[in-house]
Image (cartoon, rainbow, N blue to C red; front, side, top):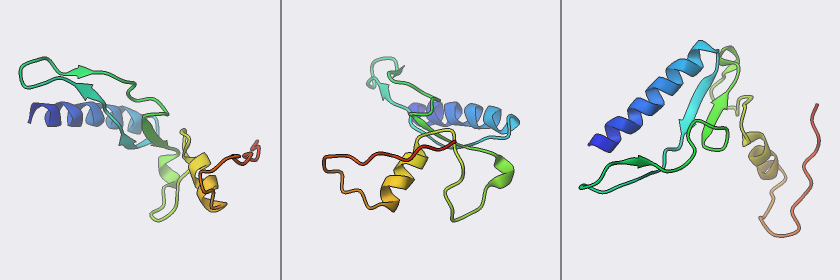
Length: 97
């Protein structure tokens, strides 16, 4: 239960801070290590664009669409849109301004 509580505390503080900046923290990955007899260690990046899904702006959020974001979700959306099969060669992604 301790790990559950710690994970929710990390997410809760980060989401509350992001909200003060007009950003939605949609998802946060937390990687930890430890056992019932050792300390819990945060072992990987946290609260970065690679481990989180940040959307902006909060005012533009709409249910059912992939909102604008500060992460790499736009690349995933594009690859899904072109039905990329994950086989080489990988497609070039179009430039955006």
